[in-house]
Image 1 (cartoon, one colour):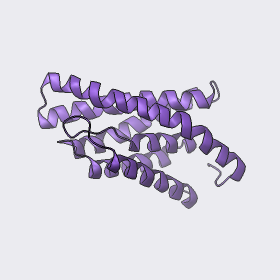
Image 2 (cartoon, helix red, strand yellow):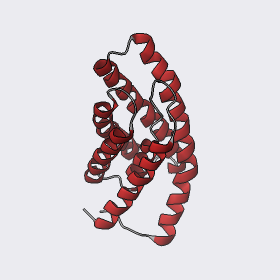
Image 3 (spheres, rainbow, N blue to C red):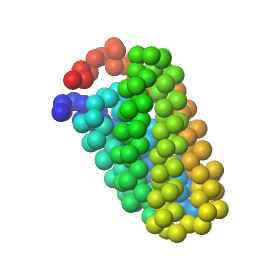
Image 4 (tube, rainbow, N blue to C red):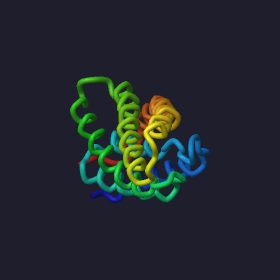
Length: 173
């Protein structure tokens, strides 16, 4: 693994952790996971399984440390690696076939839905949330997070791509 790539990924996790920590809870102490958008950005920039594994574990731990949801610590550590590898597989399948400025935001939205679904399912099993609460969490936390992460990726991904093209900070291998 290249140290430069690990440094960039750690910066993304740090930015995501700050975003995740400062966003207010929306429903029963659960807040939209802004770490996801930074995890997705890292996956899109460095789509290699070894980097995705490290990134997803770091993101899961940081998200667990900043969550306010009951059972959220375990749920975050479970959902991030699963989500990361699903998004990586879809990204690699679509790479070169569609414009990345379109697929990146779409995958951020899809990935947020996947992550939110896994997260809500795990906390419902751990915390014993009734079925109506599960639907409410999905409607009032997962869907707004999906919208926010999609918008973040629409804005941030082309900017980061342009910076990488001009500066060529690392070559992925």
